[in-house]
Length: 123
Image 1: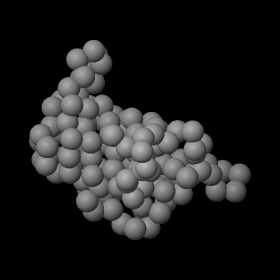
Image 2: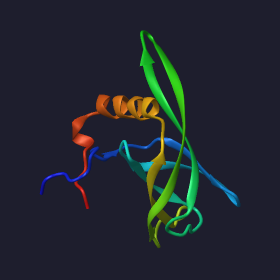
Image 3: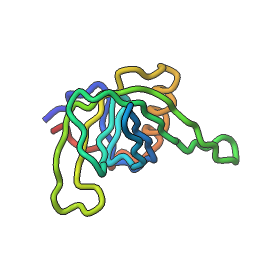
Image 4: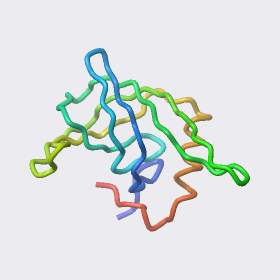
């Protein structure tokens, strides 16, 4: 089956902070693309919940590693319950509905630098 997404989704664990008016959640992505992410969380969130998002991306510049902080907003487009996942029994799919194009390009550049073997199929 051909990939239908504009940006391929890669299995990659990135630190991510999700916040709203009544919560702050520190977690990691399970997979990510230029348009969104899927991650485990410790509390249920409803579909269409609005999120403020901070991602930390480690980039190599010359001989140094630099951490780039990307701020964007998103919305929960999918929610799942994973009964046997201990501390993080919920999973959410997030669509980045407001991300600066320069930040998306940084994210895409980082993802493109990763192994192509991490690409996963659209579900």
